[in-house]
Length: 459
Image 1 (cartoon, rainbow, N blue to C red):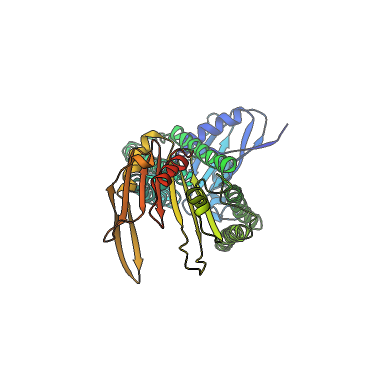
Image 2: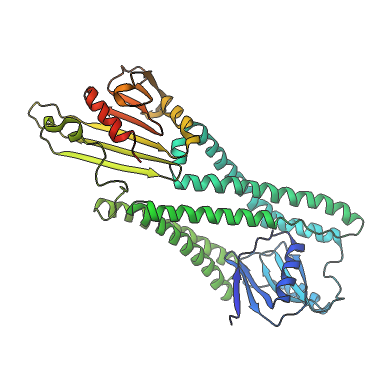
């Protein structure tokens, strides 16, 4: 029978009422809270008993303190005299318990308690949540921009899809948490004038939903990358999971070790922050440069879809293809909603005066029909931002309709950038595939038909 267990609890830092009720239920089940950290709440097994818990706040405390300060020790002694045993702390939160059903409450002045809670909340709750809310809103705005102007880039990336789930949920959670606390504080002020305490609001259900949805989205992203991605994507996905796990455990471990060694708050904070920064940048550098080196050496591959591009110059030219050392490339970005495949083939000039053909194409496979029109519109109205010698400008694609029949497509466009004469660049719209293709020559009808056959139905 295990003697300890760790849980991730979804309780607000200011929700003293919820924390007290939760710990009372855990004690009745035979589990006493032992310590709380960013890695979870740790409980130790006890004989099931009915206990009362009290949660108070000490604004001057820090999660980096090696132990209770002198003032806290006096406060703990005073509480013990009243029958309350100190259990543990979590930053400014202090937890006490008693087995006396008629014990005198630790806090007897509601106005003083309210100001103490608010002072602790500004430091340990409102500022961190305010910063997180600002970041979440910025990311959410960027996601809205991508939905409007770059749906292909958004929906073809599992990472972007994960962020599209997480950031709006975090923004919602921060708004609800801050609003619930401020609303409770207004009500508590009025009650305190009458000498009354009121319970803190409980947002546990929302926190639980957000936590589980975010964890599910993360698990789905990693599972999809590992099972369907390229060897490079699989390695990077696993490395990032290990990166986050090692970073959290290492930083928390250093902080707890220094606390056990009774190192001062200032030294602990400085050392822990240094370890966090150095370890984060160091491990990320290893992942990035290790992935680049492994890819250059051929140990990892970005390609997941084929041994070679589905459409090659040899397919289009047959025996008429000039002799040359051709090089091809085939890469993809794939998600459950949209897949983007990039293929190309070219060769260096041979010096014989024979023109060497080349081809480039991008196939966007829209798996969710509801996204097709938006993706099509993005490609028809495509724009790019160019920065050249400190001069920034935006250029738009000019799409001119052309005959779609030779391509076997629903729509066909001959495309060019502003101020350029249309050449052999085309946008082809099939039932769910959108094909952007560029030739270094003018394709024949037979070659156009082959493009439709090879790329129009690419899965």
